Length: 436
Figure (cartoon, rainbow, N blue to C red):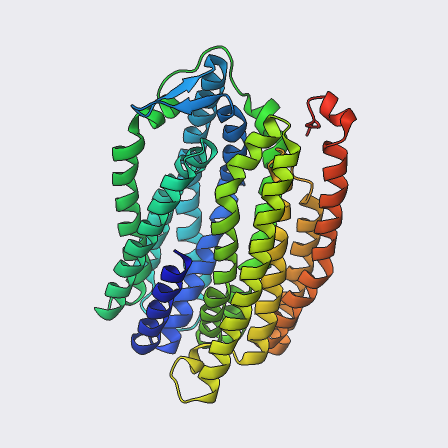
């Protein structure tokens, strides 16, 4: 599946390069970076939903009709979780659409690019982003309910449809409307799939009133969510800020080079999550049942695969970029040069290697990485602005690599300490999960 996605992305980049002007490319990728600000509306709830649902699903299963069966109290708590998620994301979607439309309008109005018609496409993309955000709790709860295999196969189909729609839009000259059209068709097929396959399960989760056993947001969810929220917001400043910074200080062309390079580099992160995230619900179920030996066996096996894939992938991507710069190719001018690309790849491969450790910790319904996330966000924000303004993309690439190199060992150290603490006989005797 990852290979198909890579081919699809390459075709997308090729069409982008041939049809988009350098300025249009800059707006296109800066659009994507600004849209990532939706984390301020979601506030980390999606990941929390997956882990909490997986702990309840340890007592449940799915009937042939597609309805949850098993422990009545677990069904009640799961239903209360779904109803809360529906309310949260409805409000978050309205907030995100309004915030993106107004904030993006102000930001892009200062670009000085008079030849690019961005206003209509930006409003449309803001609206589609809000609608897509409403699907987040559905995917999160389905994964938590251990429907990983079906949902991930469909997500691949959705990605293909969305990419094909965007590719077609580029070839037809849709320009900056491309992002909205791709997202719209991806959203449309998702709604059809959900209604066809999981309408009975989602009816239980979102529409049926729960019993007396309910999860309370303030008592049960907030202690974990606020940590996730700060971590996810920190992630924006570490992994999305550099394109808007370059757009602001150096214009659309340089921002487009960074955006296209980052889209290529982020394939490593996509590979990591596509391999490790389907296992997150199983990790949560094993933790809920205190089956730590199986937990560690699954974790170490998955982590070894992640490290191997991301290392090989980083090297392969760099060779492609290097080859493009050695032979006349229009793609070379749309990417960063090999040296900053190498820095971005090395940093992303190193960060991807720590992702399984973070997911392992969060599967315990804890977020002990908050302090590291905040430190990383602070360092990256200052470094990206200062070095990005002075040294353009080269400064940002070096800052990203340096920050990741310094912080990654602390993730492993924290994982080692928390694993010993949470899996000790004393902790196991206290139901093994510490309070948040």
